[in-house]
Length: 244
Image (cartoon, rainbow, N blue to C red; front, side, top):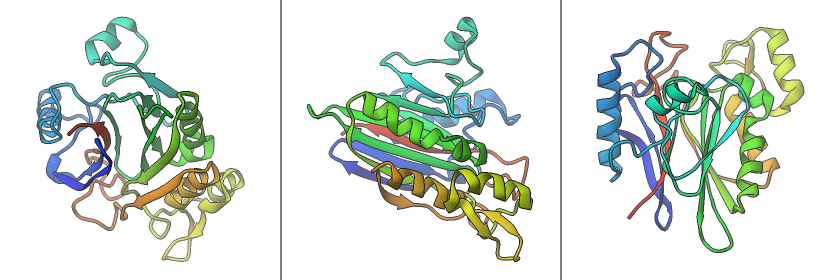
C-alpha cells in the first residue's frame, strides 16, 4: 500500500502510496464509492479514523489553503460552493496537525513538516506540476507555514516524472526555466525536457528547507501511476499526519 513511509520526527509520519493502494482520486472517472473505500483502508493503515486525511481539489495553480481542525468534506464543499469534489480548491494545504493528502501521477508531490517554538506541528502538502513549479506554489507553501510559526521545516519530494523522461516543446522549456532555472534539462532522447523534481528541490533549498527524501521516476516505475504512461491512470498520494 505504501511506496515509502517513515516517522520523520516523534509523532509525525510521512508516506507516499503506490498502485497497491489503488486510485485515490475522485476526478478520473472511477467509482466514487470504491475511491472512498480505498481512502478508508488507507486511513486505517495509518491509524486514523474515517475521513482522517484532508484532500483538495487540485487545479495546477499556486493557492495555499489553511486547514483547521474540522474536515472540509465533499458535502460541505458542495454546499459552500467554494471548491470541487474532494476539499478546498487549491494546490497546497497547511495545517496545525490535521492529516493532509496530495494526489499525483507524474507531478511532484511535496510533503513538508515543521514545528512552532512551542513544539506544535505545522504540516503541509503541495501539488507541484509544471504550472505549479513555475508559479511558485512551493515557496508560497513555505511562506504560509512560516506565517503559522513553523521552524525547522523539512521536505520530502515524492515520486514524479524525471527530467530524462519529461519531454516538452522547446518554448515551454524556456518559459519554465526562465522562472526556475533548475528545471532546464535534456531528456534521454536528446530532446528538450523539464526536471520538475530538481526545480522543486531548488525552490525548497532556496527557501531554507532541507530535503530529506526524493522518490523515483513514475514513468520508469511499474508500481506507480503515470499519466504520461497511461492517460487513463489513477492517482497515488503523498501524506503527512500525526500519530503514535
